[in-house]
Structures are given as C-alpha cells and as structure tokens.
Length: 275
Image 1: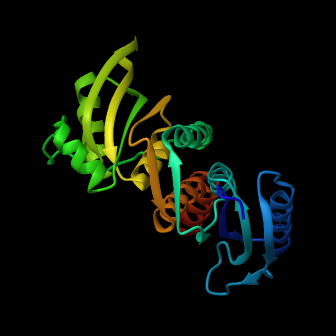
Image 2: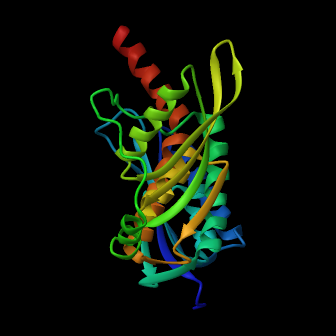
C-alpha cells in the first residue's frame, strides 16, 4: 500500500419504489465505481434488492459494499459523488497532510458542494438565534497556540458570499451560526459588493479556528470562494476524525441530491391525505 493511500469501505444505499429501476441504478453506480480511474477497487459486492412491506414509499432497498483505495483527495471526492450511508476507514490509523495539500482537497469540496447547492438549494440553515448573545470575535496569540497545540485545532481563512438587506444583521447571524457549528472566530470583516433594491451582495472574510471535522463541514456548507490554511503547517488526522468528516460530506451530498425525491413523496402523501 502506498504511503499516501487510504483504504476504506463505502456502504452505498439505494432506495426506490420500483424494484427493476433500483436494481438498474445500483448496477450503474457499481459500474461508475469500476470505471473511476482515481480509485483502486479492492472488492465490490452488490446485495439483492429487498422489499420492505412496512412502508408504501421507497419500499425497495439495496446496498453496495465497496472496498476502495485512493489518495485523500480521491476518497473525499468519492464520498461526495457516491454519498455512502456508512464509511469505514480500514487504514492507516493516522495520516499527516500538509496545509497546502489540505487546501487543494478543500478546494475540490467547495467546488463540488457549491455546484450541488446551485442545483438543489443551500445547506447552511439554522434555528433562530435571537436569544443567543453575540459570540466572541478575536483571540490572543497564547489562546490560539493553546487551541493548536493542546486541542489540535486548525487556523484557516475563508471568504464566503452572503445576501441580505442589512449588513450588520448578516454579520451577526453568520457569527452565531459559526459558533453554533463549534467554531471560534478570530476575525470577521464584511464588504458590500453590490446592492439591488435594498438587497446587498456581501463578501465576508473570516479567520476561524476549529477541529478538522468542523473545517470540512463548514467548507461543504458554505462553499467558500477562497480558502487558506494558516496553521499548523502539518496536520495530523486520526482515522476516526477522517471517518467523521467523510460521513458528514456524504450525508450533505445525499441530503441535497435526494431533495427532489423527498419533495415528490411529500406531495404524494399530502395529496393522499387531502383525498
């Protein structure tokens, strides 16, 4: 096994109302995996489609179990493309990645998730934070070093796009959302780029401190237009942390791509209820 290679098992679930259509879709997914030149297929199993008699909607299900090898970039992209329900990291137990390599991977995540959100709608939706106080913005050098060395956090910069009628309201809402995600905000600067009938297009520059998994989550949810890792230069990531990040990414991709299907089911159930 190459030094920069990661071995994983993806459990890719398929659901549907038509058994033959679902079987065909699962076979097509298996063929896409086999043709994916960025991945090495160690093993690929496709279970028989089964019927769940307890439900009328999406009553058929099937599973692909794919054991794969690839670089961090290849495995991360695959998690978004194939949206596995479960990810198991087989090896290694820990990886080390440079800040530059991680920025490249996150750039791909931002681009792919941005395309999905263009098609299916945004991911970053939060409850109302009216009762929450404004989060702290700005930390001392000693505090940041404590986060890096004792809590294994990463310092990074994002530039994200936002729209709203009030610049300050957008700023406070984003700050509360980031704190809700488990992020520490060292810097936050907003700049209005355009205004049309009172609605503003705003660029927001952020310097944030968080765990590896939160960094991946925020990249997927906000699809930043610029990403920069500040510290540390070498990031060590355990298999458990990487597994969590990949499961999050796959879940976000699944949530977006299945929205049209969920909307159809809701419409159907609402129609039945009205009748």
